[in-house]
Image 1 (cartoon, rainbow, N blue to C red):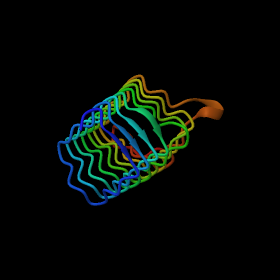
Image 2 (cartoon, rainbow, N blue to C red):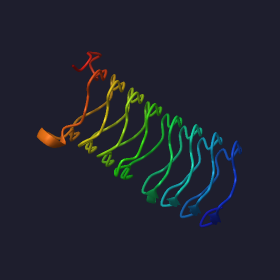
Image 3 (tube, rainbow, N blue to C red):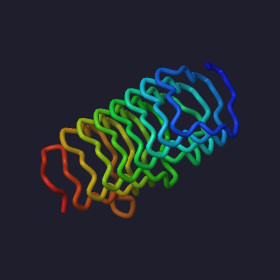
Image 4 (cartoon, rainbow, N blue to C red):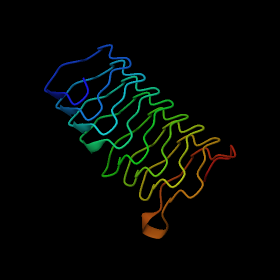
Length: 169
């Protein structure tokens, strides 16, 4: 399916494990609760895609283009590669499992990550300004060089579990 163009497809609960969507264009596609583990979306164009409760574990989302109006609520992104992906502009990632995910350089500003699992995630150089990380789990995450903002742009870390296991007040 590399370079495929898919519009308005209903793929709820589909098993698309290890599918190649490199450079593909997905518009208005419903992938709710689909199995997309180990799928390659590198350089794909995803617009208005519903990935609610989808299994995206070990999935490559590196350099995805036009990641707008993508719903990732309750998605499993364990071990996913999200390098250089822009998840900013008020994305809602409430309760998303991003444990062991590679988020190096990812723009997560203005993103709702409340109750997200970021255990062992690699957040080196990530941008989290104005993000909501309330009650997120950052235990053992690599936050070297992560920009949490300051002053009016500071991320909300209330109740978040920090890399050392302490709870942020």
